[in-house]
Amino acid sequence: MKQDIDAASIDRIKKFVLDKTGILLNDQKVSMILQKLNKQINEGVIKDLNHFYYNLTTNEKIFQEFINFLTVNETYFFREFEQLKAFAEVILPEVVEFKKKRGENRIKIWVAGCATGDEAYTISIILNEFLEDDIKFEIFASDIDTEALKIAESGIYELRNVRFVHHHYLNVYFDITKDGKFKIKDEIKKNVKFIYHNLVDFSKYFIFSKSDFVFCRNVLIYFGDEQRRKVIDKMYEILNCGGYLFLGHSESVGRLSDKFCVRRINDYFFYYKECDCGR
Image (cartoon, rainbow, N blue to C red; front, side):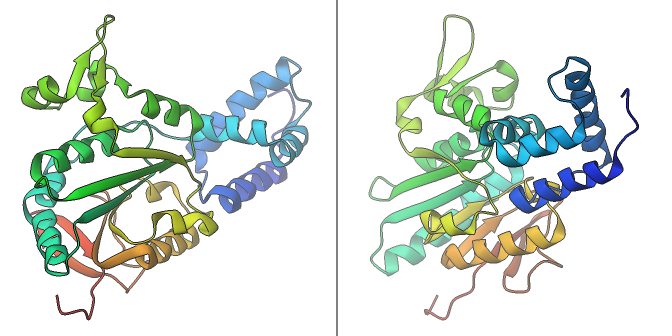
């Protein structure tokens, strides 16, 4: 950068992003940001870091473009397969049986930080395969990245996204486009509703209230500890009695919350909301 790095401005940018989105910018992210801003300074798009900070905090379009730039969207269908297998074969049947005893026949799922939609559609496929016809389900999938949500809405994916999908599922639930991409079929797509949502915007959590399952896998690893705690607590609140929270393999609610009960199936830990409703 032509100018000395303005540490104070960098700190202001980091704090603003953390407060606004929960995302904690590490040194690698800061280096990536500085490269981008250096290019913009050299091209005359911005004067300096103070100029960028002003634009970031006052211009919603610039803020959204910046968040899209920061967001990690490396995902694929049937990621962390063993966890999904335990969900489909053990946890899902138990929850369905519990709901049937209460005269309920609907499953509600929230996929938080859904990125390009691979995970949400994966879960829709699983439910389509494992649920009986008399059990209905709806999936709400949310993300803060508007570009990722556009891909999710299209339901069209590259080969790398479906590389671990069993050939049976590929044949049944995907169409091949003329240019060799994979398009999710409407019977799977219709059960998923994509929503723009910032995880630290707690005023919008009512949309996901009374969820039976919340999937928030490999999302909170990018958050600060305080923001993680608040998000985990809100997810606990919106879960139904007996509902489950799914985190990534390397994640835990351990030091973030003592509200959840913990269950281990093979190498995965599952977190659920205990209830006093006779389950």
